[in-house]
Length: 99
Image (cartoon, rainbow, N blue to C red; front, side, top):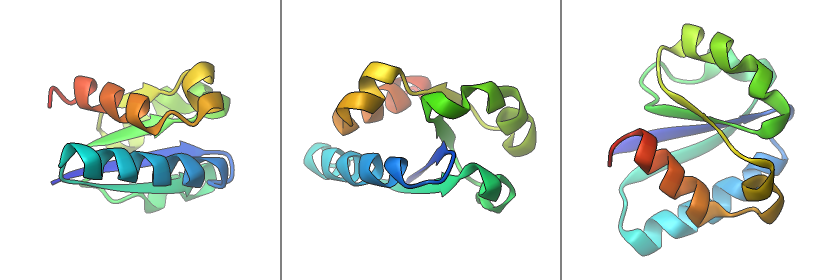
């Protein structure tokens, strides 16, 4: 089971995206756990997370996130984020993870 973390400023808007991604994962029978976090909780993200998906508003934190957690990251595009494209973002995460 893959563990996916979403990271944005407050964790609110990514919570909506989280729900859409969970729905997409269920439709695809993709075993994963998806959770949204605010940037202030970066150090509370579990060490065994497989990937962190960054909201476009925190893309400047990419190097810090990779150094802190030691996992791959993907910056969600403004188009994906604005459309709350859960299926598209999940697809990108799976590509990065080679799933």
